[in-house]
Length: 383
Image 1 (spheres, rainbow, N blue to C red):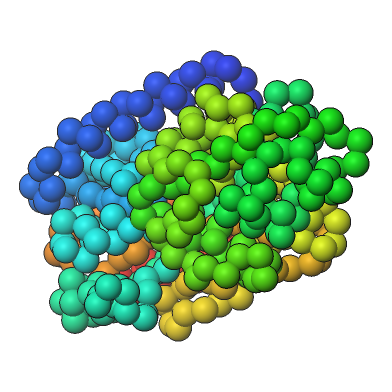
Image 2 (cartoon, rainbow, N blue to C red):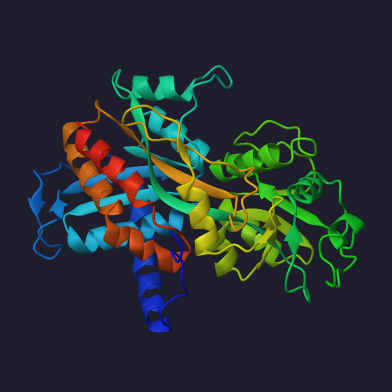
C-alpha cells in the first residue's frame, strides 16, 4: 500500500486546481442558503464523463469535517466537470457540527472523522438521532477519505524532531513548557533545541481530528494522558483556534507553536512535522508509513455500516500510527428520493479509483481497494 502520496506535479496544474476549487467553494457558500430547492432528474450517462459516470441533476448539501475539506472540494470539482446539471455544496464546519446538522435534517450527508456514537453524550445518542432523522432507518458510516494527522511545530533552525507518545502527551497537556526540556533532548540527540516556550494550539470547535488525536494519546500513552477521547479538547494548556486552518495558521505565525493537524494543512503551511516513535523506532510521516496503518485497520461496524478500528498503539516498525478516516454519514433509507439519486451518484464518484488517486496530490491517501469494494456495495444498497 506504499507510495500513495507524491509531490504536486507542476505549478500550472496547481494553479488551475486552486482556481477551480475556489469556484466550488464560492458556489457552495452561496448555494447552502437554498437547501433542497432543486429537483433531481433520473440518472443518465454523461457523455463527458464516460460510460461509468451516472449523472443526476439537482443540489446536494453536506457539512462537517474540515479535515476532508480539500479532498471533497477536489471531488466536487471533478464531479461538476462530469455532471454539469449537478451541484454539490459542502460546508467544513467540523465533524460535530456536521453530525448535528445532519441529524436535524438540515443537510443531506455529514462528513465526520469519527463514526456515529452509540453511547449517550449530553443525553443524546448520535446513532439513534441519525436513525430518527432517516425515518427510522439506520444511518451508515462510509469511509471515503483517509489521511494522517501530523504533529506539527514551528521551530526555526530545527529541521528534524522526534517525539514519543509520552513526550507528546506531556507537551499537549502543558507538562513540558520549553522546547529544550531534557525529555525532548533525550530522544533528539544532536539536535540543537531552543529554549523557546511551547505554545500549544488546539481545535476550539467539535472535531473528529481532535477525537482521533486523543485516541492516539490515550491508546499509546495511557499513564501520561488520562483524559477520555472526545470531539472537544479537554486540556487547559494552549490556545483554541477554529478548524484545521485555524490551528495551522496559529503555529505558522508563532515560533514555538505546536499542534495536531491533517498532513495536507501541515504541508500547505510549510510546518515542521515530527517523526513518531511508538516503541519500534522513529517513523517519518509519508505515504508508505501512513498506508501501513490504514491497511491494518479492523472492521468495527456491522453490515453496510463500515466504521473501522485503528491501532494507535502499534509498535510495528515503519508504521506511522496517527491516521484518521473521514466517514460520509448517510441515510440507508429515508432521504427524499430525488436527493437519494444524486447522493448515490456523487458518492460513487468520490469512491472511484480515479477520484481517490487524484487525492494523492493534495496530501490524502486513497482508501484501500478492499474497503472501497465494501463502500461500493453499501452505496448500491442505499434506497
